[in-house]
Length: 181
Image (cartoon, rainbow, N blue to C red; front, side, top):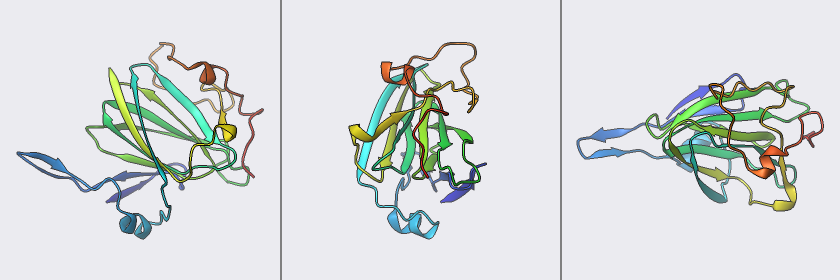
């Protein structure tokens, strides 16, 4: 597995070794031993699967209590995946990183605890799978508005408005959001 550091060193992009032939392909999307060897020693407890159409923007989500690390990958289509550092004590506090993940490139993004996460669907449809290190807790669920001017995330929208849930349209500003110490 190839590990690619991002502008935020705690967020990494993982490229699995792919075995491909005339029948198709095979790769390990997760192997606890390999992940521990590369420094990701997390016990994942829940798998999530979402399907969204082009232009849907989900996020920026996080849990203030029961915080979650995430391992994100795409099995259909393509997304622009974003992680925002919400850890006040971090040298990259308030910074974001965005990466294109697709079924074709088979890349995964590891997002540690203390980050908000969101993605924009770039293809006609996308199916996103992600593992989490803690269970979903609605009472802990928080959202930061996708277009917060302080964060200034460069979403590849090409002038279009994203399709948002009511929750995401009403997300807090970065300045008003509950953050991690």
